[in-house]
Image (cartoon, rainbow, N blue to C red; front, top):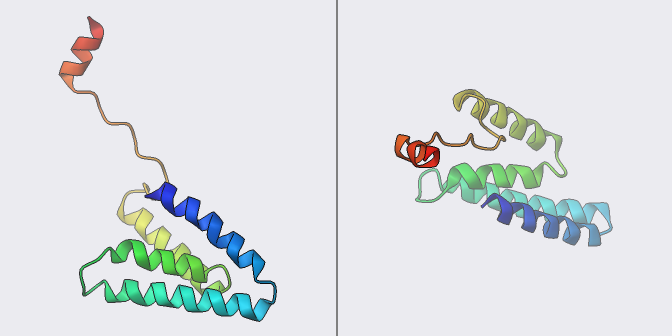
Length: 106
């Protein structure tokens, strides 16, 4: 999922670079970002992955708005506290099962 987002994020940035005038770029980012953010907020009461869609909308808005960047940073900090500092880091390797360790020792 992360690879999909980062791959498509680069395409999104390339598309935005083609829009030269600052007001037009800001309008496109605003419309796309607020639409995704609104869908995420709706997903808090409707079925859907709100915990993925809301940060995605904020990340898009953070390209142009300082308040969205601030809010996204505080959200990441809160998520890091809740998960014990595991947000934004690769997962730790799982422990081996005793049977796997015994087979490897043979």
